[in-house]
Length: 265
Image (cartoon, rainbow, N blue to C red):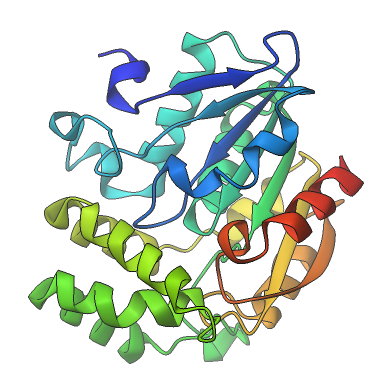
């Protein structure tokens, strides 16, 4: 199956420009980039897509073995690059897709020029013995996954506004809730387990592609201490603290996000 169908790949922007690939976070789709991607249309070839199970992706392409780890999602990205003969790629990954991009860049570093990691977290669960703080105790994550398994729609309506933050702008939380609810529930439950139980700290140490880390304030999913960890353990990375609050600056503060990206690029 071609990636165009499997991942609903959309190619826009400047055909002669440097490729810029946008990868959405958990429970989202490529529409989440509508306020950010157009700012790069004149200078870059824009590549947007949906992870299998999200947006307009082909649900029949979902495979339990392939997507039992983030590596399967990274392989999807590499196949999109191969199929479209994309090199010198600027990869922009939000949330879990930040780590998916790191994995992809480690597998085929010659394909990637730079990574923009928005709200990245290599490990959500605290590891007290090793001194690592990911923001959640293991019991927190297990409770989250049990709640998600038992009532996905209820979990979505409760958690999406918390993840989004910005309670003074409820329309943002509603948009994320609706996005979660459009995602295939069966796949979403499996993707959540893969996402929240992953440990990609070693992948950061292997990365040699220059990376920009965009860290929001008051981010309950990827708090500031996690952004600091990613910066410290990623060689040659740049850390920028945004004024934006919550976990989705591509929706809540697109202008600040674009400005930070352009300044670094």
